[in-house]
Structure formats: structure tokens, C-alpha cells
Length: 325
Figure 1 (spheres, rainbow, N blue to C red):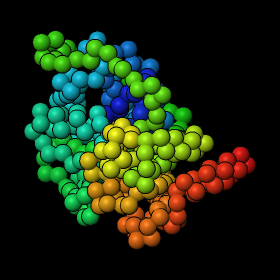
Figure 2 (cartoon, rainbow, N blue to C red; figure 1 turned 45 degrees about the horizontal axis):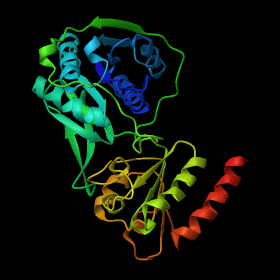
Figure 3 (cartoon, rainbow, N blue to C red; figure 1 turned 120 degrees about the horizontal axis):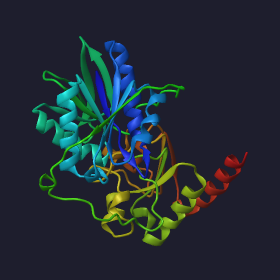
């Protein structure tokens, strides 16, 4: 059996988790087994139905009032108890911020290895095999597993969703016992950024700015562009973040977030290897830079050598026309 952890954000199952569930179903079909899912939280039983269209045969709902907000200690304990009971051969997570925190903690409890940020999966001789980037994306390594369960986190926006079907499955609700003294830290309050934007790791289109933006006020140009492009988010290079022009949560690159959108638009970004490591797996890349020798053009599908402050207004008007049709 393949077990997939489903992450909840703002009362919904995250799209990246449904991508993992879809990929889990593909591998389950090869292994002639089932894919099942697990939800952790409090009063979340109603979310189980979101997993069935993506072929989960069973959803475990682990409930406790201490699980209302994510805590590495409580969630890993809840997961560990379930895994010890149901004995999955494979456990998959999204390589989101939560997945990157929870998966290694669970792997440590189970005493098994973990392959992180995987971009391909396959089955060989009845075992899971994954491909993940190394050396800042300059090379790729194929990983197979000796122990059990086999554990991996999958990069968001890489694995396509299955076409949803009208299906039903079994919901197994479990009340998890977690001694309060074992939870060393807990969330008291969530303070959201005013006008919070879509996370770059989940966006279909990422519109990024770099040093060529010349100042924080000019990121409004990109926000105007993003406002007319559906399911888009604002990204940035490290130089723009280090200059204080935009918050770190928008940073794309080796020391920021890794993204794989359908379209990545780079404005005023030179293309340092650290930045390329975070976005080179994008399906399509458009770059705008005044320097014709900028490294970003080496990975771009389409490049414009020019002043972004002249290009963006024209691009915005053309996009308005196209999207209005």
C-alpha cells in the first residue's frame, strides 16, 4: 500500500498534495496495490471527500484538539502511530515547507532513508525509484531504497493531476492520543501578511524581478501584471530580497524556494547559478534583460533584450487583449 500525507491550508487540501496523490495512484497501479491518504487535524473529516476523485481508496483522519495547528512533534507522532499500524510500503509527501519539515522527522522515527524534492518516480522490480536534482540542479541522481517503508517528497507543480472522477472511498477516523507534555511548542496565533499573495511554489505562473527592478516601488509593475494573469505569483532573485525590496517569502533560488510553474517570467534577473537552481525546471521560461550576454538567456525559451520598464507596459496591454478574448 502507498500512503500519501495530505496537507491542509485554509480549510482545503493543497493542490500539491493532490499532485502527490495522483502520482501515488500511478505507482500503485504499477505495483498492483492501493493508494491511501492521511489527513491530520481537528474537525477535518469533511475534507476526506477531496481525496477520492484522485483515486484514494481510503482516507485516515487523525484527530486531536492539539492537531488544530501544525506542530512537528505532534504531527510526526500521529503519523508514526498510523504507519506502525497500517504498515505502508511507500510513504509520499509534497516537498512543501510542511512536507520538508514533517517527512524527515517521521523518517528518523522509523529509522529509514528519505529522498527529497524528487522530480520523477518509477517502479523497478517491485520497488520505488526516484530521480532528484543535486549540485544546485546541475546533475540528477537516481535513488532506490533498501529499507521499508520507502519515503520521498515530491516537488510541487511537477507531477500532473489525474483527471478527477466521481468516486467514493472509505473514511477511517482515529482519535490520536498525544500527551500535552510531549508537544514542546504550539501555534498560539497566525498573523497573516496584509494582502498576502499566492505562494510561488503553488502558482502556475511566476513573475519574478531582480536587481534590474531598481527599487521596491517598481515591483508594483509586476504586481499589476500578476493581477491580470490567473493563478500567478510574484517571485524575486536573492539580490532583490537582500536589498530589502521584497520579502524573503518571494525569493526563488538555492537559498529560497524551488518552483516549477508552467511559465516563469524573469525581469531584470541576470541568471546566477543559485537562481537557476530554483527555477530551471519551469516548463516555459521568458526572460527580459538589457544585457544580451545575461546567463538567464541560456535557459530561456523566449528572450527579450530590452528595458523591462518599456517591455512590461506593452506586455500588460497585450495580455489584457488576449485574456479578454
